[in-house]
Image 1: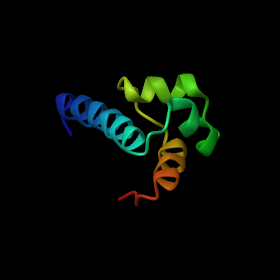
Image 2 (image 1 turned 120 degrees about the vertical axis):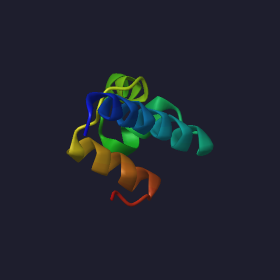
Image 3 (image 1 turned 45 degrees about the vertical axis):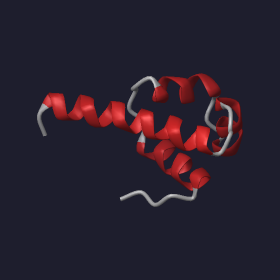
Image 4 (image 1 turned 120 degrees about the horizontal axis):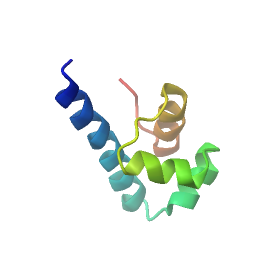
Length: 68
């Protein structure tokens, strides 16, 4: 994978987290409470920081979405 593709994928994950959260009318704190991930970390993910695989799994479970 080229660096540009990695950066694009990372920012897309953050955007998808934000969209899914807003579709459920959840605040970042709501998602943090459901995943046991601190709210500032959720905010960093939505701004483009790559989630760890453990946290990505927790977020996908909170949204009831598969990780593939």
